[in-house]
Amino acid sequence: MPPSGPTSSTFPDDPDQTLYLYTAEPGSRSEEALRALASLTARTVRGAHGVRPER
Image (cartoon, rainbow, N blue to C red):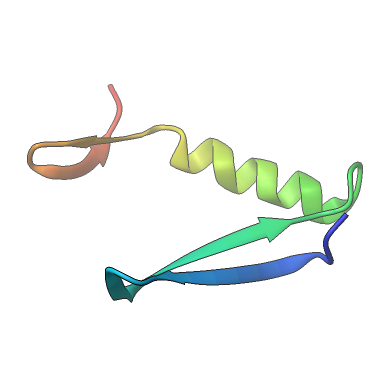
């Protein structure tokens, strides 16, 4: 498994954009925290007028 913490990557066509990938050991407190964070973002919907909370 990769080390915990962020790994970043940029895109050749848009170097101003950066993708961060976070990993954590299975069963760790870090995994629990990342799952909690993911559950918050899963409730967001991207529409024509930007990001808004899901109804």
